[in-house]
Length: 106
Image 1 (cartoon, rainbow, N blue to C red):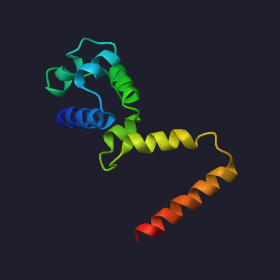
Image 2 (cartoon, one colour):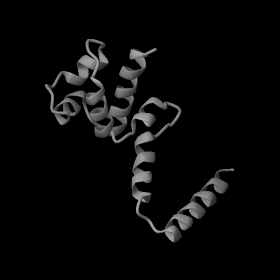
Image 3 (spheres, rainbow, N blue to C red):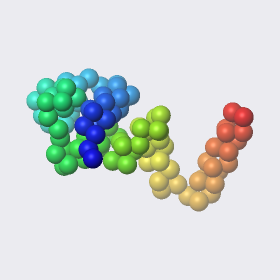
């Protein structure tokens, strides 16, 4: 079942993490300035195509959008995007750094 309240709340959370206003996001998506406000207020829902544009605008995958257990999905996606195209050697170096940073948190 579709949880409309979750979608509205998640758009707001991710928009704030990105640091943009509802107005700026609406215009960035090519809509009137009240487009996002209407969605988060429960007056409308985006089509599936518009939902995909919203995810792209927020720099998250649809999967990350619905996974609210991830505290920083925008940063995680940015890191993943940055890792694409790295050599195997560089990826192994990065994994070593991640392991070292995790050990420091214990």
